[in-house]
Image (tube, rainbow, N blue to C red; front, side, top):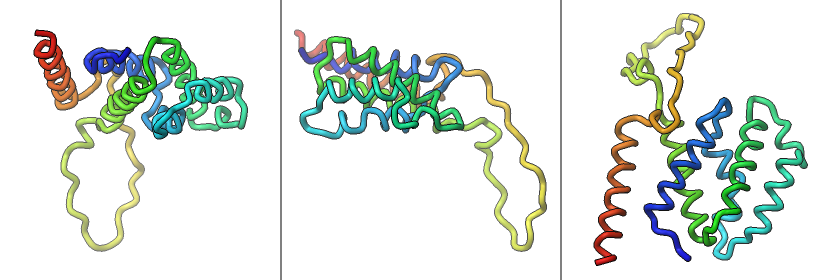
Amino acid sequence: MPESQLAIVRQAERLAANLDGGSVKVGKNVLLALVADFVSTPHPDRDQLRRLLQLVQAGSGGHASRGGGYGDQLRLAAQVVAGVLDDDFSDQDLKSLFGWTARLLRNRQDETPETQREARPAETRGPKPQTPPTKVQKKPQERLGSWDAKSRSALEQIKQQLEDKEKGGKK
């Protein structure tokens, strides 16, 4: 049974929070790497996706042993996505769910600290001074409160439109 788009968006918020709320922050590209075949085919194979997730969790292929935190992200994403497959979603609803989740994860990745948002000075000719880069400490992110105001307002607007559409269709 097709889920309402509003329910899918809400589930995507929960899924994004599970992927991005703990000590391991799963990036949009890691999620999409796992579900790319499922999302891109007209007739997705849920069993094939389950097998892929099981192989990733078992460490097959060495992808989960990559450095730089990628392996941790991949294992967490495989675990969370496997849990979603057990829910009662149609294949098309799952595609939509993964798309919304990737969008929410992308919005978080696109955020930069306030200090980096300032305009950079125009480049000058000549050699650049060799100064060591300074690290900008990020504020600890809250689960769903870490999106910037523009992203949150856009999501709220979409949710309101979906609620209005559902109310109008049920009269």
